[in-house]
Amino acid sequence: MTFRPLAGLALLTLMISSAYGQTPHLPPPETVRLDRLQLMQGFPPPADKRIDASNFLNQYPNIRWAFHHMRELLPTRNIARGSGTPYQLPQGEDRQQDINALEFTGPDGARMAFGDYLTATYADATIIMKDGKVIYEAYHEGMPADQPHIMWSMTKSFLGLLATQLIEEGVLRADALVTDYVPELSESGWQGATLQQLLNMTADIDYSEVYADAESDVVKYALAAGMVPAPDGFTGERDLYSYLPTIGAAEEHGQAFRYRTVHTETLGWVLRRATGKHTADLISERIWQKLGAEHDAYMLLDRNGAEWAGAGMNATLRDLARFGEMMRLEGKLNGEQIVSPEVVRSIREGADREAFKASGRDFQPGYSYRNQWWISHNKDGAFEALGVHGQTIHVNPAVGLVVVRLSSHPVATSAHTFPMTLPAMEALADRLR
Image (cartoon, rainbow, N blue to C red):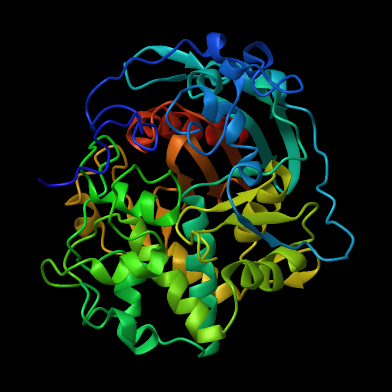
């Protein structure tokens, strides 16, 4: 009998609901407010209010609490901010009331206010900066300002930035084979793929990432990472570096963009092998300390201590705003050139838009994907780091705009939130232009 990893389990909201194009049933946002749910309150909390590693993903609205308490649920490695003075985010004119009332046309053709958009996308915290100054900052649903929130796939953009910088420095070569750095993958689907193809997710492997499909390979990835507990009888790989070599080949590398988190897990392995350092330490030394971060960040680990390079970083809202502002300023902040301006410019160039279009991500029209960043190619040159359940860092260089939204949307895939986010960001840019 074939073992089905999710048989008998309710492991959903890693892939909580539906496939692209379907409309899931969503709880009214006002019914899942943290200040009303009283999750993990009391000493000890009542049984029906307790959250642990076995139920934080599979019972909505548990993620509303879990997403900013991940280090209480799973093993982590710290990303130290160092002992320097935090970079103080300048305060601009308070535009919160004005922005909340800003209207735009949503994907259903109806008018929607920006504040209602944040509610409808289950936002946990939002910050908006214009020309380097904070003009909007809100912590929704009881999220504390000083608690790191899981970033999910926005983590990928940190890894991509580090890799691009190391290429600029000559530590890595974009045209080198992935297996030159990680020979353990010589019999895997990455055999013959270059580092640049890995960065752009155009290396082709036999792997599916469909959050709504209980039989998708993304479930095996989640089990290997320790994202969810393995069910009784599970005989598959239980750590990332055992799992990655089992992924086979598909078609020719370099021909098509297909979004797969395991590409970034492999990139994390490349970075660790090339530098001899943990991913968390690389982020700390090369970005976090230089950024003047206010709080330590951290990364989630598998059972052997490998960071989830594609999904595991956690950071506070204001520190992510610092990071977004650094990207807007082509790598410079806090009086320091943190990454080369050529690195940021290279990322912003984007990649093959036709290859992206063929991937079926119709909710991101005109986009491409380069070095683990989403490039809009719009008139303002906007680009983004994105993560499941609604995580967003949006940078609009032409308008001087940085937006960070942390969220706990019930549905993992961005296909449910991005059709609202795209017109919301366009309307915001036009208001502030």
